Length: 369
Ligand SMILES: Nc1nc2c(c(=O)[nH]1)N[C@H]1C(S)=C(S)[C@@H](COP(=O)(O)O)O[C@H]1N2
Ligand SMILES: [Mo]
Image (cartoon, rainbow, N blue to C red):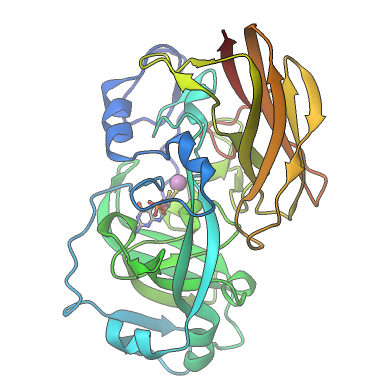
């Protein structure tokens, strides 16, 4: 696999398509990507399950047009029983439904300095949906995985060029992750058939992992006996210090929380305005590493523990709330979650070359009248 993509250059000028970091205003290419790939409006944090159309979307290439008559899922590689399944056949298999918070690994990228050139997320590359479909482990059991298996490779129908490499979007999972009972081949999102942008007719959902693992428009599942080195595995989605660093793979979602910005926004700046007096601050917190165990809310730098709602599932965000009596003036609100591993959100983000795994605390500036 070519490893020429993220060369270091000694310039701070934007170089479209290079993936390298830059300062200054957004480039036209970043703007184009951000108009295609939308985030979740923060007010959707009020809901346990993100309403249709408000879930974030990230698509590297084009959304493929798939008619379910011609579409089949192939399962093969190091299995005793290769198979090809229609959507109708898959729908007859045992199904599960599971609420899952997905977050793009690049969420928060545009806040980094210098800013890695790619989809310029701010904070809202996240959403929670109830996914319904067949457990991957069920189908792998039917196919009978051979003992030498080390990974499972998932390939989407969508094709394009990234870093100069022509490819279909493909990712792998270690065999142990692929056999988890909650990894699902989903054909429904929030009870309805998958929308085109979310992977119709079938997608993988890997609870707890950043979104890149959840391959949309799934075409084939191949069990392999050596690690997969496709572009989205070996080059993209790595924590790197610089262009020459092979880095480490991005996998599980780091602990994070967000709040519903209180009051009303200014149209252009999104600055918040609210009346003096009591206000309930609310938001959600999640982690792919372990359950969220605490959320603190910072009010002008002073941290207070928030109330946590009951978890809706092991891989769905958890609601939190804190009453605040707003006094007139300018204030800065923030929130910071901790998970069962003891991980806590950083106050300043550690920079990495691709802008992955950002979980810096959100800060919301409000003016109380
Ligand atoms: N086939 C395919 N699957 C894909 C992608 C893609 O471009 N093609 N993008 C991945 C990334 S980076 C993310 S964050 C999630 C986004 O899922 P969503 O658009 O349903 O929110 O899909 C993942 N699966
Ligand atoms: Mo992503």
